[in-house]
Image 1: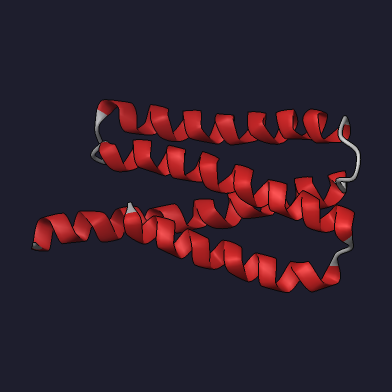
Image 2 (image 1 turned 120 degrees about the horizontal axis):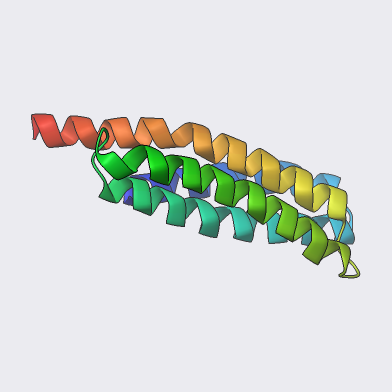
Length: 121
């Protein structure tokens, strides 16, 4: 879990470093909100998957459930952020969806690495 959290912070830091100078104040606030939401949701979803063994009965259900939660979070964030002033909705939603996608791609690597350490160590 700590390796995934560390790598995800590095990825998010890279996104912030690249996006920050390109955005105005409203866009920066949208990016920060997206980063915070994405990290919390991803870490929660990954912690649930890491607690289960791949191939167990609830593993696929938890993976699908986590994906549905991400979609619901994007929808809820869209409605919530649209009602707020001083936040660029487009930046926030694009950043949130992009971060979910990239961080989701890291999950198999982290889960495989965890499984390899269990079998070899």
